[in-house]
Image (cartoon, rainbow, N blue to C red):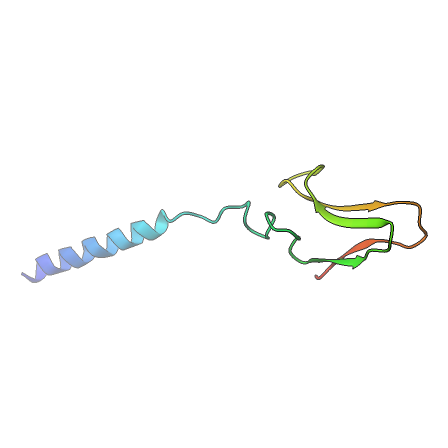
Length: 84
């Protein structure tokens, strides 16, 4: 009887261990809030009149977004600032 009980507990432990091994890993597209309206760890530093600072999707190197500054002729600087 004790051997059967050990066998049942061992089987249950193996089932739980295998379930955690095959758990779904996080989606890389959602890490770091690349899908959000603003990027993680970045804030708009300055945005003088005549400029726009956006989290753009029109041009990017990877992951579908980029930090973009569009500026007309002005002597003021526009900037993104990292929180790191």
